[in-house]
Length: 137
Image (tube, rainbow, N blue to C red; front, side):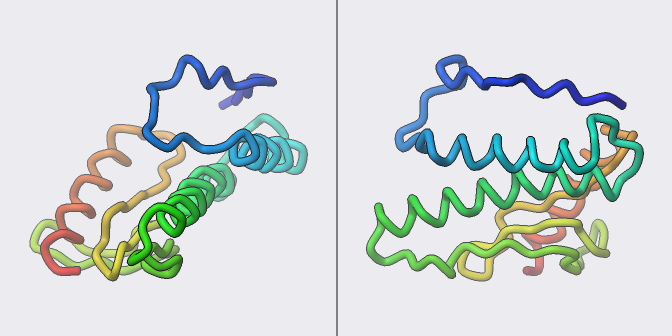
């Protein structure tokens, strides 16, 4: 699979947010992606390299959300939102490890399973894992 990453992201084409990321946040994301592409090349031959790129997006999203929450809401602390890697989930519809999870005050709010080739399978796994997380975590 070849990933063609544009030299620029046109933020004006994205939906408007109440508190959009700053230009510095976008630059940070782009620089991280370019760095990984420089290290690994544009070909993504396996799931491990897919995780490298997925990690950039998830880490950046959590970081920006932490930063925004800490400045906007006095009662929310930086550590209230945490990213987990290879977390175990257990529920009636499934159990096992997810590649990434995000917790807000110990409540799972996001799970992600990186799948290299089969998008439908990955989406189904994510749905089952989120259901399990909402039941018991």
